[in-house]
Image 1 (cartoon, rainbow, N blue to C red):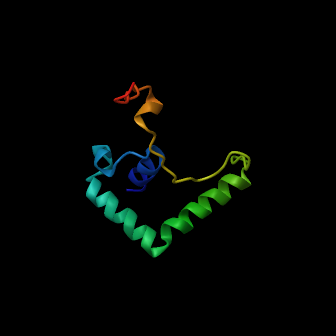
Image 2: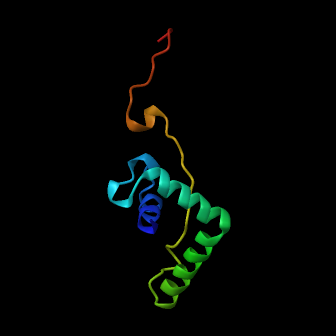
Image 3: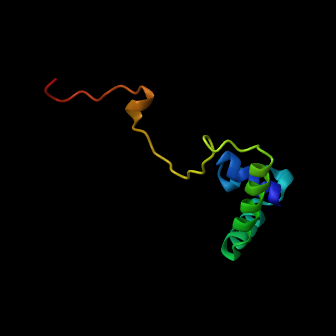
Length: 87
């Protein structure tokens, strides 16, 4: 179950794309929400971060968690610009 949750968090893929080896996506999703609401997931991640930091495996210059998503305009992907009626 945790592997499925971590896979989803690492990849950012939709829950429905969770590989079958982790079980039904709905079950993993519901467990994830229950862990979040109880605060247990935060405590587990905090402990993992502490252990990794103590082992020197986290570079504080590079470590961050960001959930920001920005949608780019079609033109940002090289789409042709629309021509105005005058031009």
